[in-house]
Length: 393
Image 1 (cartoon, rainbow, N blue to C red):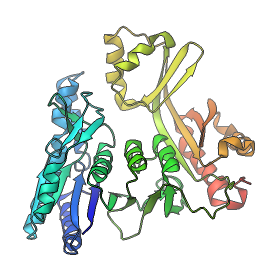
Image 2 (cartoon, one colour):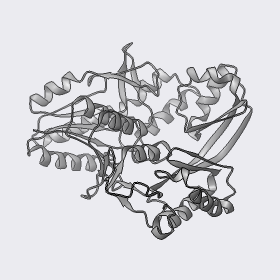
Image 3 (tube, rainbow, N blue to C red):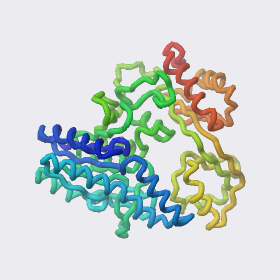
Image 4 (cartoon, rainbow, N blue to C red):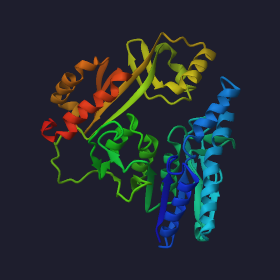
């Protein structure tokens, strides 16, 4: 008897009809004898609406109270799905993150999981029930409700899969798996039937919205069998592996995929103010350190809170830039092959990049946000769609 974890994102549970559809799908699989744990996000746009309500009350709402408010979205979804399963005659029970034994630190809004003690889930599975868990949330060691930050439901699912030694963890989303670029902006993206953990982690850290990087970290560290697939089709999706097939050329360098991030803001601070990051509870997309300065890049929606935090701690922003973005090429060894750099410089020159840098598996282009989509399209056509032009040797 296998233990299967299934995580459904906001669009997958975005209406009563979709929740009923998931219940129908789950009921068929349950009859095969598997033990099923379902992790759910809030219904589409619910979290944003709750967030907006809080800011209608206060310009700077307490992060503790925000966590209390925002976790309501997942609780609504878990209850509705449990009711839908019960209507079909299946025993089910829903748990909040705290009831599921997800123990976190005390950093409200972006808490880290410290341990899991999901004995109640195991007890209910032994009784033959389908268990539904509210993702994105846990409880701190001080018994306070916490949230896990952006993409927290992915992290909840993979962390539970690790604790339960699940045979499979399936992440259901609104696309058919991992693609070589965002299918919403590229005409001919290529579906990737498999990808290794390090390259998936590079994509996730650099703006790919399919899977949160913390979830990939859990999967990699604890060797969780993970598949990403669509809630709206029967396509097989993308399987994450430790390493891809060894029979491939060991020095075959190519662009695996392209990630991107738009509409970022950059604050430049004095490096002497670095102590502030010990108290910094906000999600940062990237940072750069040069000479005596630190530049942090973050999403526009966080600016009000970050600005208020800096003001409260008497930190001065030396420079502010808005409307910047990143395009990131991902592939093993591409940072070591300067032919990739040469072609990247040539193709991006018309977009006036502000900076080009690299990491272990990436080439990163910083540029104006309004140029990001066109830049992704050009690079994807050159490096992915035209395989003969992918310069790896």
